[in-house]
Image 1 (cartoon, helix red, strand yellow):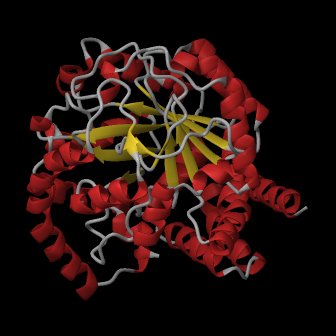
Image 2: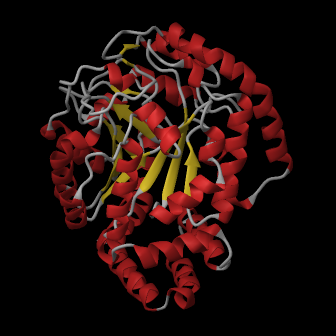
Length: 451
């Protein structure tokens, strides 16, 4: 009943805003403040109000873009599922389960429908995988059904190229029309027929992998892939379908993907959000020469904050935003990764597990020893600018893998945890003093937006 009442109120709020966005945005914030006494919800509404009160802010201009550019039904469904089902109602269930069972229960689940991919990108571990491993539709459906019982309403797909299974994924989204789905995709399989299917579902958001301009992108991903990305963005934008971009920044593209030129182009193409990942040398054939320098990571640290404040685009940095989420979010704390064989990995970049989803419930699988080790050790450092137990404090990952009995889940060639962490140690040592300086600055000058 709470869900139905909240959805009805949110729908009325959407109708109210669409009539006159500039006039009614702040009124909606005030309305929300009167409707809830929940401290977490009030913080979220306060952030919305700050954006609504400042027409020059990036947040205000992003809200205006969403209202004006997106298909109204799609916007209605996505925000209803995300705000009500996931952030408000679902998150309450998640928090209660965490407290009751003293374990990690995630806010989102990332899973690989397939290892198959139509590209062979330099430095990508999936490029070496055999193409036959898949999660069946029945398994994915079970994960979502059991996940919703635990309060989890956000499901992400990676791979491989997840849109190799796009028909199954759309069917899954339509079967679970109260959840939010998103796929990290190289965009080459997005066409007019698929955009029609996205509109019909209304709850599936593409996240397009792109690494700069044509030269930067195609150097890793292959000739013609950049043009495919831009074409897909045009299709999605023209239909009012929300989408974002995903960028791996490395030694040879960091300054460009952080530039106004690239960010402004993504906004012009229609992207509403962007996820930045730094290059991680996962896998025995990893291209370690791509690892960004500590100076480049610091550049991105400052740039993502500047972009959020000044651009009509929401961006996050998977490594540099630890202060906002309390450190590492992996191991089921806020998310986990299920690979195409069903192995329960703590993170998409950490290919070790001691549990598999097949033959047991999601709840039981979440209680595995590796995830318990994450739970008991998070955050891994009081300096939240060093959140990662692999890339920032690699000795912590080595200890957890050995203590839990986890084994390599590499689908091509096994890599020991020592081999992985040895590749990460030089970057961790270079980043530590930079992270300490940034942390001391943050503590000396606290900001309201760290809620």
